[in-house]
Image (tube, rainbow, N blue to C red; front, side, top):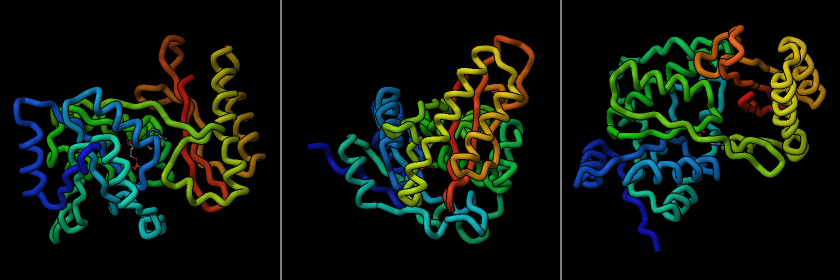
Length: 283
Ligand code: AMP
């Protein structure tokens, strides 16, 4: 039987627990999450296990990455379930700070990422988002001081922003990306999928189908503008309202370069009913 992970809710408790885990020069991996854990999160935990000796999972629904009109209040919170899943994976420590611990009265500092954070994708529709993410991830790295941190490719732009943040602030953390975990019908797993009505859930895999088709056509050398326009039509016909459906340089997230050898990534965000879904695929 795996042991229930240690749960730290205060900074002194976290310091004691991480010092303990590190003893004997052991490497620490951090998997930052907002809870409501699904198999996508669990795949990150398993990768963390392979990359380090001890695994810390943080659970914190970060208010600074939500705009006032977004779903901070209703974001799914499934604490008991989350802990049971992490226990089954043999996770060593769960870092679950209160909002006041993360953002005490008088808190007045914000990290403002540039580069991939200004690529005109998520940032165009959620301008508050990457500032909130960078600030909380900067804090999580400072608090836990992991050797490795695992982030999902599901949030591809976020992965690039966080990897750059770790380099630029000399945080000594290696940021590792993990592949997207999907439902059997191709829908990328997400804590927000519980918002989908049965009708919208049935239509949601159209997003992944459109990504796959567009990626195949781009690989075959078809004209990107035409491929993207057709993809947008297919997605709209499936009932989505599209925020973006773009092909970008996979590293910088800038416009596609004319260099044929540079890696490309398709990225999409679209709303079905009240639910906003994001997904992406390597070309
Ligand atoms: P979240 O709890 O949604 O903030 O996600 C926490 C981490 O899990 C992020 O690094 C996400 O990119 C990652 N993640 C979420 N969904 C998936 C998925 N379907 N496959 C792989 N990673 C995921």
